[in-house]
Image 1 (tube, helix red, strand yellow):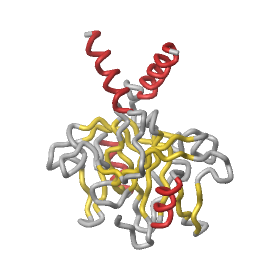
Image 2 (cartoon, chains in turn orange, blue):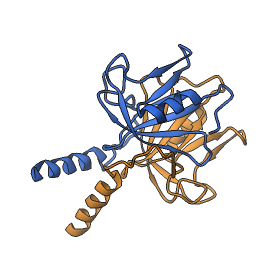
Image 3 (cartoon, rainbow over the protein chains, first blue to last red):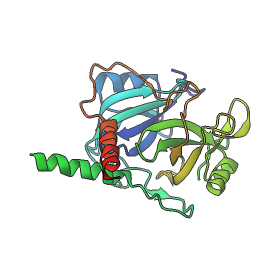
Amino acid sequence: MNFNEDGLIPAIVQDYKTGDVLMLAYMNDEALQKTKETKTSWFYSRSRQELWNKGATSGNTQTVKQISYDCDEDTILLQVEPKGPACHTGEKSCFYRDFDIGEEPSFKREVVHQIFESILDRRE
Amino acid sequence: MNFNEDGLIPAIVQDYKTGDVLMLAYMNDEALQKTKETKTSWFYSRSRQELWNKGATSGNTQTVKQISYDCDEDTILLQVEPKGPACHTGEKSCFYRDFDIGEEPSFKREVVHQIFESILDRRE
């Protein structure tokens, strides 16, 4: 992987079922190795200058299902199953605010997921 | 927004229908403004040190449907409708390679999308 001059690489965290992008955090090489080994998400805190295991204090851990990397090998993408909200605010995703660009998407991806879930429920 | 010491902010690009994460690139303030105004994706190339409009040369532009930002206001998330592959390799997404962590996700999100698309097709 191509870590930056600080030895870090951005890691996008995505809910593997809903497709929601939950957060972005940074990994160093050790965080990446620990994530592979433990199949829970580890990052490097730039402010605290230490490794952290997401959810270790809050309980909102993330079980890692897949780890991908991009063409330039300078970004990581984690597919996870979250135990709770990803955001420290209590929101499911850290990306809970939008700029007003004068239109609402006519297609709502979350609706597709909800329909699928209710189909699965009916089969049981 | 909290741009970093180089005046940049990472921007995650996601297919608004399938939920696939397509790429990550960096924006400066001008790129963000141009993205809002033109509703196509603009980034700042760190290697070429210039603004670029994704797809301007390849034709694989991205129509921007939604622009979100995270709790720390230091990451952008674009929901886009891509005209073609996001990756310069010709792959749909730049994240086409995975680490082997000893398991395959049992849930395939793309299958949900395909089922939904085929339901829509049958209604026509």
